[in-house]
Length: 93
Image 1: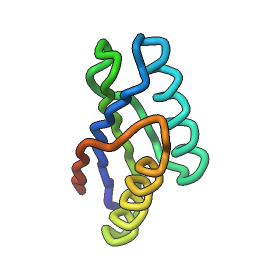
Image 2: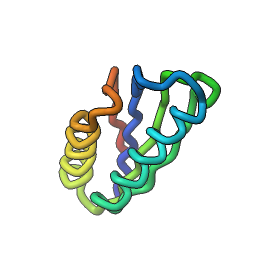
Image 3: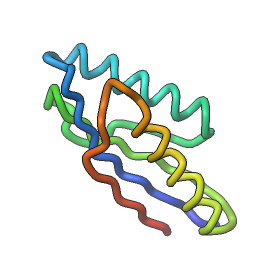
Image 4: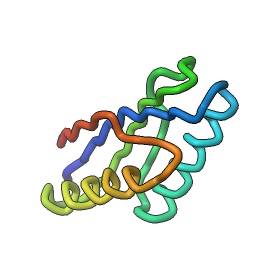
């Protein structure tokens, strides 16, 4: 069993309050969950209103499948107009 862990550093330039940030983060979380059937959560920088750190986890029996799925998640989030991906990292356990 392979567990793929994706950490996304996301900039939210249009957010000027935690409420606006939360709306964008919830929209990203819901879209990614619905499209890719992965686990998603905000894992850091919860008090910063224009930045979010989100974790995405996928489980598979092949590392190549996990890598492909999480790479598609990164491409999907980069297309969302309310935010921009500053950095991301992939880890496999």
